[in-house]
Length: 348
Ligand code: NAD
Image (cartoon, rainbow, N blue to C red; front, side, top):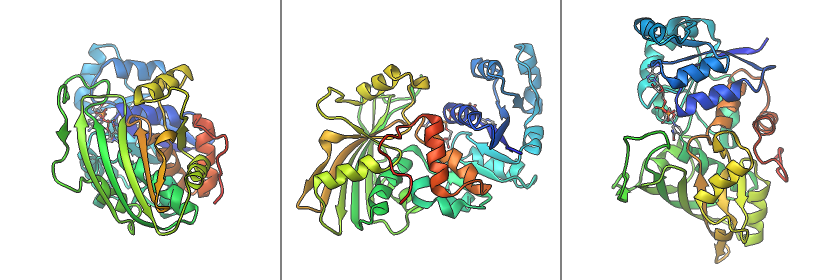
């Protein structure tokens, strides 16, 4: 019997998680999605055949707009074996206290929640096994997921990391967010160093020496990371390229084919027919990969904030319900969701 999954919060992340869940009908059944507002997104969910649930006090609003509702959020939580919570930052904590704990439902939360509301902060390549059998799991944020995957690439290949220093250039808003900025500025975000990303990486890989700093810019398409990793042992540039090429969920953006910017990556995704132009892989500019003095690795990496955490949500579900071992899960997720799999190793 497939695991019954309810998705609470149907925005940028929640809608993508719902669309991913229905691609694994042997393992998961999407019981429904919870929406607070009767809007075009709710209407599309219904068109896709998803059952929409809302709060008791909102039922009339949905009725007025003719958007059919399958029941209340209370009922959705009751019916589901597990909830994937994709509500805005900090709302997940309230939902856990009000709905999931009283109904004894396990749940997955997203990166906007604090690490202390869960048993495990999760990133598949780094710590899949920690989530096996866990009841409350947090899939870390888009930037943290990108960094955890990148560092895992080196660790999985047996290399020791001395320290990591990262400058993050963050997109100011998601494409649909018409009221957020900046629109003509570069904003230290936050001005203090380290930004929260480094400590967040350590909730997944505790032993890493990492310092991050971040600015927000007037861009909606992707984040860009400028990364410096100092290793304990010597590597060549060719070693690093091989390591990155072999590691799942990492895509090398080819050098010399005029794929020179984040906009080109999004255009590539469009041309490849990727749904919503999603790019679930870390996108590392091959031309930027540089090794200095044999130990210092430099690179630039694009992160598609809207979609990068979707594969990790699917793996987290499998780990919690012990449906597959780490590498079986990662491979199955990647093949089914259409990530780049050519040349990837799925056993380390
Ligand atoms: P979003 O605002 O696009 O979507 C959240 C949705 O939840 C909205 O539709 C909102 O109306 C709804 N909602 C609010 N309160 C609710 C409630 N009590 N019950 C049901 N629905 C409720 O937000 P998002 O960008 O999808 O972010 C969701 C989570 O994912 C956050 O923790 C965020 O930090 C994290 N995250 C976001 C991104 C990103 O770049 N967008 C990337 C990775 C992780």
